[in-house]
Image (cartoon, rainbow, N blue to C red):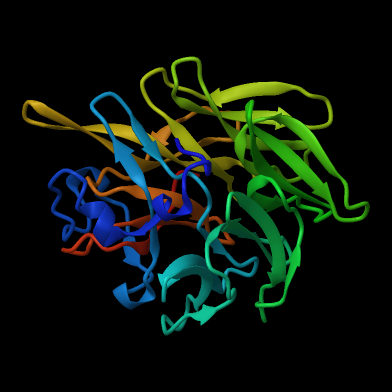
Length: 328
């Protein structure tokens, strides 16, 4: 996995520039045989300029930008995503029923990631500003006017608690990456535990997060920020998993993970979409395409999973795709 300590210019790229560095892949293919029975639907078009997270490969490991860069509104009517246009990266929102043009919701230079508030009224996002990453809040329907939440640190991955009283986020410091919370009533910030990619769980004092293992791979943990109880729920000594997101009913977790594709005598490390039950059991790989599948998000009803992929475009440009979820 990869955190935001590297330069912003290296984090989010249009897929055409990422594709050039990857092994030769037939991106024009939409699905592969291992994905039979799964319905794929393309939700954006090339003119939406969807950002593709950076993926870096070596012979022994795979690193990728794990922050959330797509999200669905609480009523399920629209999807928000990061788009790079006019030398700036901003949040745009597309109506899922109309499939028309998108509306710009931020007017910044370098938005890194974001999330919707549970009631759908607000967007919280982080932006790279010089040597720091700061967190802001804006109106999800009107946008542009922003309230600054943090400053002077390297903060990112903001995620609202279900009751909207706390905003969780990750902060990079000299000792590593840790989970923090901003209290909207008191304006105080508190440090909770090591980790990144926070995902608060409904009806609980716990959240999911990503942590590095002793072997350098990333794992998914559950952390109770009230009692301090911590539990690793998804781990593999040879693969990384990151970006957990819990289903609306709280029963499933979707996340990006590492897989290895074999082509004759050569192998190819890849990113795909995985799910497991809330306790970490029934780990299941959902996608198998040689393109990179990243930044998964649930639909409001839990019947679909959205993600970013270069599949289906001969030039390897990124788009948002939707698959059905039927592992109930």
